[in-house]
Image (cartoon, rainbow, N blue to C red):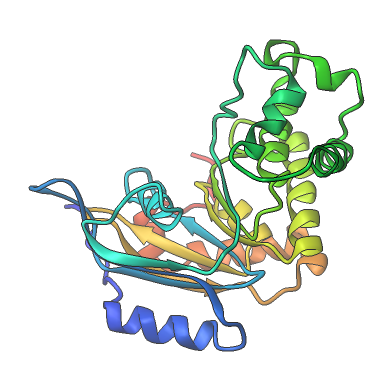
Length: 274
């Protein structure tokens, strides 16, 4: 039998959003009432999301539930079949799972690609490049290398640097850390959170990793499939600098103990390995 969650009605989603974001004026408001790639194939049901400035919100859920589709609509990369997006962000950047570096360009030129179409002086471009390179741990010789000469972790850092040089107010992240080993992933977390804190940047992130979502986010939204909808919203009240693996593991256990969420992720008896 197909899992059939109790979907949050759009009116309830909007009420919860208002109460959650009351202290901060939303920098992004997304209201999707329907989205289809094909007239007979509904991908998203009613979904409403407000994000306050400086907030980090993660979308989690099983494959095919519409997380990436919702993120692309929020980022303006897709037009919803029925709905609207209102963004007050001055600059936005999107980071995907694949680094998408141009293989025929050097690291410097790849990082500079975000400057296209922006009226910035050469001095300002160089300042931003040097700052991003320093944050990402690149030395001068790295900047002349091509993607084929970089390790996987360096390529992903380069992709993040390319997004950060435009100094975005809003970051959209579509599983950018999933291909990294645990050490590199932790390093990227620190780099991302450092930039978010310094610039008071807002983040909407898609991830399959429940633990990752709880580690990084102020709020976690659980999505269910067929068609995609918001099932639950979780506030993570522990300050970022006080989160430990033990505390986050407790939050993960509490979330996966919820019967609806356990059914959604097929995580009955989830503490057993097999």
